[in-house]
Image (cartoon, rainbow, N blue to C red; front, side):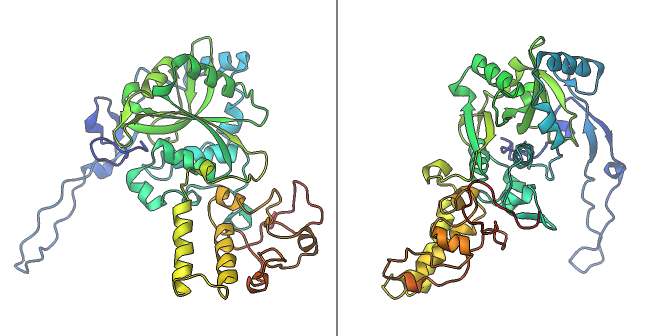
Length: 396
């Protein structure tokens, strides 16, 4: 539901008429017609009323899927729990959410993963609290665009990396079912000491569901029945459900018409600390915008870099990086404490506001002394002498 529908539906769930599986019940709004309105011609004629829009409340799961809340669904859960293959269920289900827009399944699945893995966004959600929500994941693709087009496999991967996750991604066309089964078992049993979340991109039609491309997290595995538990983030449409692992594997194989590649799966784990990432690691997803900002600064300075303006330009670019919404970009200049790497330890401990250039740099006096603040407008950490891997966070 997140990768665009080949019919041009932008990945948004199709109407009930596109599939024999009917909705549970149409809303009363579906039988009401719009009132006629005067035409713009000024002749008093009434314009033709637009056809009523059908609205729905949920859908019945097809026979290929087993409702998690059914007797059979509970039996599979008990079997998986006894096998030790439901460990991922607890952190993922604790953060399970309904996608806020019809084409937000990729964003919502990633929000579930980030919060389940206890990643601090370093930005305020509401009040004084740091927490992930869909509208915060806009460093790779603007969320307004996502509402219309959804996200591709690589765009979700980009967003995951930008927000401090390590990503082990595999497209189905480059893998096999045995490898996928091994990955599902490993993540479901929580074999990674840091914890991991498995997101799957698949074609709903292979599961006899309506719609097309979709993302959702996997919350467990029943080895005895070779079934996986999908926590479908489109909860307004389908309840969480079990499907055969082989069927979910087959649902990853169809080629996405937007990318020309198959869908796939990605294992997300939390980075042990704020990373010193490279441009290659973030797939250059956020760098173009940063370069455009730098060019605008140069243009504003008259179109050239001189001895007189070098310090202020460098200072401005560094501030742009530290204020970037991309965690990976900020990691280029911030250490594990969230402090600017350009600051000398003595300055950091004293809480002073040093130049962003080395002290022996000829333009260090031009760089200015404005304290650098991270995205969100507040200093990400309290200055602590000899800070190792922890620091007090504002608003906690």
